[in-house]
Length: 150
Ligand code: HEM
Image 1 (cartoon, rainbow, N blue to C red):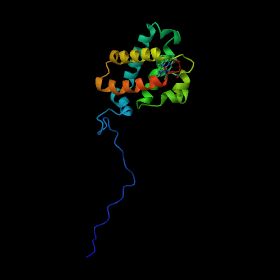
Image 2: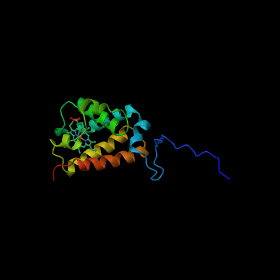
Image 3: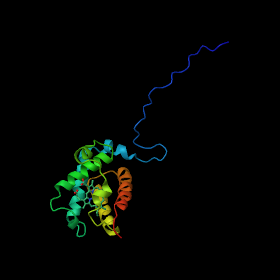
């Protein structure tokens, strides 16, 4: 007897869920961090980061006197990187981070200073530990990539 059950329709479009936590690794997906924190928290992080840079003996001299623009650059970049609107690139183009950092001498000590300021800024901005962990993973990795001096 012939089976008259119709063949199930092949899906024409598969919606991928935006998972906040990767089921296999149990880690927060970087792209979902914006959804969890919201824009204002990234501005808090950028302001807290530059408040630390502002009083840092080694880092302060390589940044401009007026930190208004760096705060905006950092906030908009982080919003974009962690899954929010592309305001940074709309304003400045592709981030090209390594190229943009080429004018500044960044050795291991400077890299570590930067990472310490960012770790402190996440605490200052009261970012939950579960979100600090993946953010710091990104910062540690990228700050190393930014080094351009022995
Ligand atoms: C995770 C690592 C880092 C990220 C994501 C990052 C991100 C950024 C961004 C988005 C800008 C703005 C660039 C522009 O739009 O022109 C910037 C500027 C800058 N960064 Fe970094 N940076 C990192 C590491 C470092 C390190 C390790 C140093 C030195 C210790 C550093 C020093 C500077 C300086 C001096 C500027 C110029 C300030 C400005 O014009 O905004 N950065 N960084």
